[in-house]
Length: 354
Image (tube, rainbow, N blue to C red):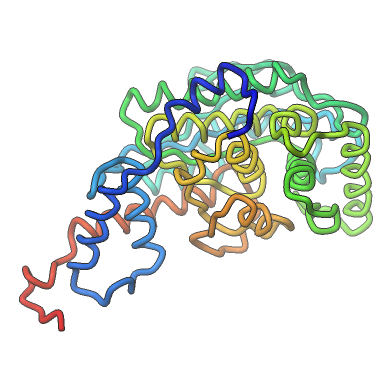
């Protein structure tokens, strides 16, 4: 664990316990008793064991699921790093709230709730289903100075923790990380470079689909951000505050909060993984509570997952964000749990095991 954690994060960290090894052993015994060769269901079996360890139940009940979509704007959009204008952030938040985005469609099919949180949108938004927790109206331009203050980053983390606590109290047991923020692959790449030791060529990708000229420009913007902000690579909170986004900080809180409530958190793509990297460096004990959903096409995502110690469940050539890949992984998680509960054992089916 990072030393000198703020008291708010220290309190959450103190509630994160190791996975329940007895439940993992019981889940493994159940898996080995099913009518199949040992380990033949691969990552489905790994997910079943992890879910057991997270919840402390050999055969966990995971029907209540939610994707938390954190939304925030980025001052670095002033540098022309995205193919879309920053106004799209607020417009897409309303799209989420009206149920029309890709994550809404996929969540409906997965039986999951979509919870949209305004933690830093540069607009005045109002909707009955919006969770309004705005810390400030967008971040500063990281190419010219810090994204936010340390206190603002902590406040955004607290937002994520609080939203998880409210949902967990209502019975949610699985969370997915989702986000919306035009320009947010830029701060995510900067975080990866600062904490993961990659070069801009390795970490900075095309985001919303920029051309070669703008990609080179984007790399230069990230290089300036790193030079201007002089991040301490030993201090993940410093990297988050100086380089990150309010929605990224909110997702750090979602991850820490889920672990504190013994809930599984399914990590989406590049931006979500930047939050996961910060969370794992702040409180390493939260990493076993994460399940990586997919490998994004965004450059650097594989390196980001490796830095956390995660392996993606699926490869779908996706790069949309919103939590779409994580929600797709809900189906695989449901399959893993159903196999444990519904598949016949060698004994019950009268099948020879040797």
